[in-house]
Image (tube, rainbow, N blue to C red):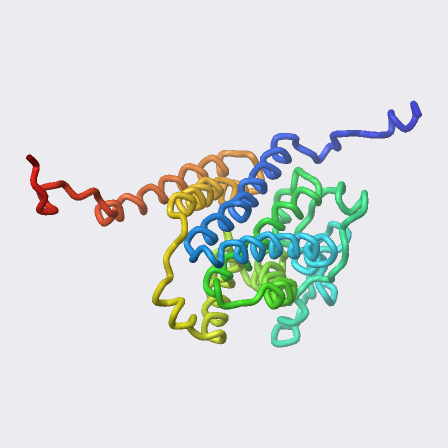
Length: 305
């Protein structure tokens, strides 16, 4: 027992407790954007009859992505290249010479597989897209941080089909979409795939998350078609106060979204948090003159006697 205690090192030489703590905290902020942030927002802006269905799809979608992510999707998006490039044993490897269609598909996705082992979770995190400065936290931290991004993306495009998709169909769509769309996009840009090798950058998901969700939401709405006429005529939100609560959680959740993307608890993270909140506030204020205001008795034609 004494020998085991001596051999166990709680802080390996590569681990920085500050960076590790901030990444886990930032990931939790992003996770709160999904549950309860988006869940509360979506369930509040739809008619009351759909609220429970929306909540069920949000929680189920988040859970499905989480299971798939740690079982095989994380390595699909951040593992070794499918043919031989990417990261292998912590060392970045390149295919070398050829360019062209075969080169593109050789750098299209990573090798899927689980990371649910002591070595897989507690070893130092590596990524082909981040080789200049090594990560100062374990793979479990990076995988969890990337999970909350992967989980929120299908939930974002769910907003375009609220009330138009069945629960079972959604549960089948989420793992397929998360694997074949999101994970490939993540590998191409964040996992050291083709786009990353060609110099493309995606700081906080403008392509991997928002473009993927936006295009998918548009296509899904187009395929399913418009809501029923009776629903379009009486599409009233059931709780505007809770919708504001959800929007507020989304706002502050961006502290982890952008503040965690530098991967280190340094000055870049602080600047990202400040700039994110400042941009949000500056974008909100021009809309406030158009917000509903209480009408005065005089303007409504009432007597003030």
